[in-house]
Structure formats: C-alpha cells, structure tokens
Image 1 (cartoon, rainbow, N blue to C red):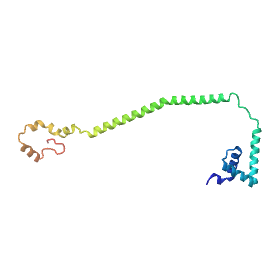
Image 2: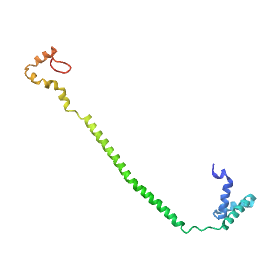
Image 3: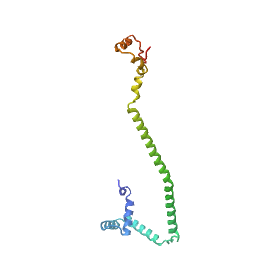
Image 4: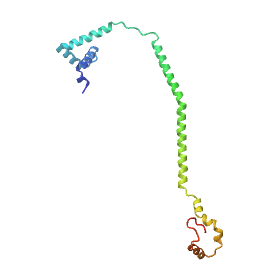
Length: 167
C-alpha cells in the first residue's frame, strides 16, 4: 500500500503546500484548482496553510551569534584532529597485530613442512635397525663357510625368533 492511500489528507496537504510554493507542474496545478473550486474543506485547509505561512513570515528572525560559524568550524576541526590522533595511536597496534599474524603463519608453515618431511622421507636407519641382530653376530657368521650349516642351526631352533639372537 502506498503512503498516499494510507493518509490521503497528508498527501493533500503536501500538494497544497507545493501549490502555495508554486512547485507544481501545470497538470497538478489545474487539478488542485478544481479541488479548491469544488470542495470547501480543501479551500479551508489551503486558507489555514496560507495563514500559517503569513504568521511565520511575521515572526522576528533572531540573527545567529557572531561566532557561531567560527565555533562550529573549531568543533569540526577538533573532532577531526581527535580522529586523526586515534588513527595514529592505533597504527602501531595494527602493525604489531599484522606482524604477529605473519609470524604465526610462518611458524605454522615451518612446522607443517618439518612434519611432512619427517613423515614422508624414508628413515635411513630403519634398515640398519632391522639388520642389527645379524650385524651383532657378524664375526661368528663369517667363520661359517657353508650355508647348509646355518640352515641346520635354524632348523634346530638355536636362534630366537623374537630378537634374532643366538641362544
């Protein structure tokens, strides 16, 4: 619903004020004049508005204080200076915050890189740890010339299955 249909009297008053101020186009001006000729309530409203404007014109206008413009400008300048000072005071805090975020990001990226390298790179010592039982007994194994003899010892369960050491 439009505003004009909600309160037609307010819309009419706005049009009458525009009529008094000479702000209406030719068609709207003609329509208001037809309303004035046909409706005494519209004429009374227009006369009341016209009297109100006349009374307002008769009121004494109080001149503004001489320093009003100057004090207003000074208040605006002080407010602008306060705002500039506030921005200047917040600049180091913002700079520290940006550095902290950048440092945290760099630390997180470094940690992620280290973890990725540690988890994805094969461990060169793993094979040595698997071969440790053999390496610990390497001197004894070198004295044996025949592989059949080692298999016979294994079949007799002379080697422990858990740690690979001789019993």
